[in-house]
Length: 413
Ligand SMILES: Nc1ncnc2c1ncn2[C@@H]1O[C@H](COP(=O)(O)OP(=O)(O)OP(=O)(O)O)[C@@H](O)[C@H]1O
Ligand SMILES: [Mg+2]
Image (tube, rainbow, N blue to C red; front, top):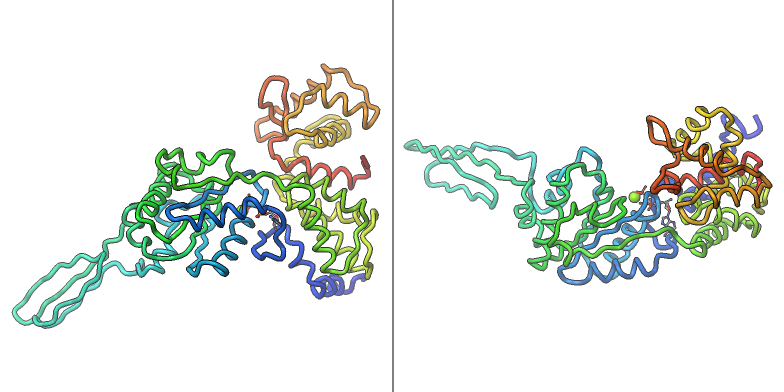
C-alpha cells in the first residue's frame, strides 16, 4: 500500500506535523495565536463584560465564528484582567431555563442530588440548616427527628439570580437558538436584568444563530439596556488570508498566491472553509513530503474537502441534482449563482453572468422557470424566493460548497 497499512504512514506524518491543531475546520478557536481579525468585536465584548451591569449577546449566521470570538475573548479577558470562574454551556433542543444554569448553580453550592434527608438526634442538638432548606420537626420525648428537604427553584429567574449574584466570572451560553421555548429564552433575559440590577460580577455571554438579537431574547423589552448586542458578519478577505498565511508559515508550507486567493474566494467570508481547504492542502503536501502548495495540490484538496463537508450541504446538493432531468445544466446554473455578489440575485443578473463567464445564452423565461423549479419541493430546497423575482440560497454556506464541489469537478472559472 502506497501510504502504509490503512494509510497509517500518511497519518503518522500528518499527526507529527501538528497541522490538525493549526487548521481546525470543525472546532472553534479558543487560543489567541490562532484567532485572527475581529478586533472591533473582540474589543467591544471585553469592554461590555468589564462594564458594571452589562452583559452581551453575540448573534449571526451559522458558521461565521461566533463561538470562537466569544471563547477566545472570554479566556483572554479572564486570564489577563479579571480573575473569576469560566463556565460554558452548549445548549441543545432538550435544554430549558433550569438545565442551562445547572453547572454554575452547583458551583455556587447547590447540591441537586440532595432532595430529602432525615436525621435523628437528641432534643438538645439543633440542626444547623442552610438557606434553601425547609425543616419539619417530629418530636418525641427523647429524640428529635428532623427531615430537611431542599427548596430548589431552578426554574425561577429570581431564585437563580440570588444564588449566582455573588459569584465572579463569565458564563458563556452557546447555541442559545437551540432552546425551543420562548418562555425559557425570556427567563434568561429576566435573569440578566436581575443580575444587572444588583450589579453582579457574574456576567453572561449569550451566543446563537439569529438574524436579530430579538430572536434570542424572545423580545424581552427591559433587557435591552443591560444586554449589549454584537452582530457578527462574515470575515473579511484580509483576515481569511491571515488564517491561511500564518497557519502555513507555522508549518513551513509555502502556498502559491493563486492558491491563497482561490481559498479566500471560495470561503466567501466563512472561516470554516478557509480552515477546511487549507487543512486538506497541507495534509496532501505533508504526506507527499512537499513544501509548496500549488494549483494541483489545491485541486486534490478541494475534492477531499467536499468529502469532509457538512452532511447537510452534501445531501441537499445531491438530492437536488438527483431529482433533475439535466443535472449538468443545473450544475452550471448553480455555480454561476454561487458567484453572484450579493446573497439575493435576480435572474437577469444570472443570465448576464452565464453569458460573460461561460458564453451560455439562455432566454429569460427558461432561466426563470429553472430557478423557480429549484425553489419547489416538499423538503428544504436549495434556493428560496425571498421576494418576487429574487432568489437566494437557503443555506448561506451553499455557494462556498458549490465552488468547492464544482471547481474540483474541473469547472475552472
Ligand atoms: N477569528 C477567527 N480566526 C480564525 N479562525 C476562526 C475565527 N473564527 C472562526 N474561526 C474558525 O471558523 C470555524 C467556525 O467557527 P465557529 O465554530 O466559532 O463559528 P460559529 O459561528 O460558532 O458556528 P456555528 O453557527 O456552527 O455554531 C472554526 O473552524 C473556527 O476554527
Ligand atoms: Mg458556535
